[in-house]
Length: 440
Ligand code: GUN
Ligand code: ZN
Image 1 (spheres, rainbow, N blue to C red):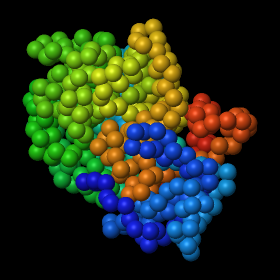
Image 2 (image 1 turned 45 degrees about the vertical axis):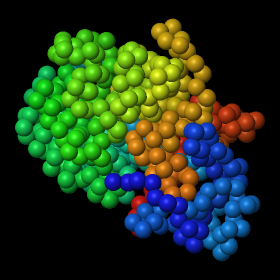
Image 3 (image 1 turned 180 degrees about the horizontal axis):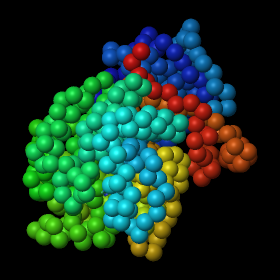
Image 4 (image 1 turned 180 degrees about the vertical axis):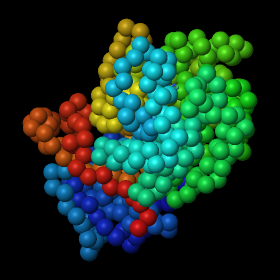
């Protein structure tokens, strides 16, 4: 699976893009060239990579004769990385409920049962990928349903588009209705079969996907942990500490565990490349467990606000020092747009009644949805940035896409003001093009 590759030599560049250019340094600080050059060319695998990025006037001299496409008044930025999204919940968006558990029971499980039909799954996979790309999302860590054919549908669609996408079949062998509940032995065999077929196939990756501890028997979680040990570069994804009723239930089912999060640790499901959505109701021991196991949190603010789950504690996460990045969590989440997600993350950071409230800087919000998310996925230097060596997944943004955006971005006196204007006022109209670094 992908590891950062050494930068290509200048003669590898086959094409240049001239526009304002946003990327991030190793500390996560935004770098911005008002008139920039992004020189790209194919790596050994044929995937387009960044050869050089920087100021047009100095850098263009190193690339005489390079064909260049000019995007005046546009901003080129890394493609967004969505750390947690459910493709079969594309049509569940906007289903109101009295919190997480009734929402799962009344809307989500009945809807996901339709994905037993492979043709239906293929249709939604196309809509889902179209929606990601329209919104500038070039990679997602994705839940399918418990039906293996739903994974095939999504992987086939992502493969056709050349995307770096990670997905997995949901494991849920108990406390789940007919139509989505799977059977323990079969579910683990199906998972291993899907790993063999999809993990490392082109740019695709597989994630072992126990839905959440309450929906998985001990045998299923143990089997998932054994697969995670056998395939160490496969991802793991699940949910944790989202909602107080959910936490109470998890602790009733696993009374021996110190905390809900510790249940997963007990089954070998916390390690590098393990990603847990929500991580809201944590104490410092949970935070230290995240840090020490190099496990990452997928912060899902539109979902947490919509379902009334609570507020991710950024101060706690940074104080203890575990990895996190942003996620839409569609369909608990209300939007595919990274701009909506970044704005909701700002609201969540500001909330100061249940935890310390802070104002997350716009560059940090943007990093959480690009280079920071890539780092949390173990893909730093591969995606989420436009530094030399990175795969060239990027967006072309039009900062004057709406009348109000045009006014506000024209008045921006600093990079912070420019980024904030786009975060607060932006949506899919800002994204003029999404370019995938697919092998050609
Ligand atoms: N917990 C278990 N399943 C789900 C799901 O589909 N969405 C959310 N938000 N939480 C979950
Ligand atoms: Zn989720």
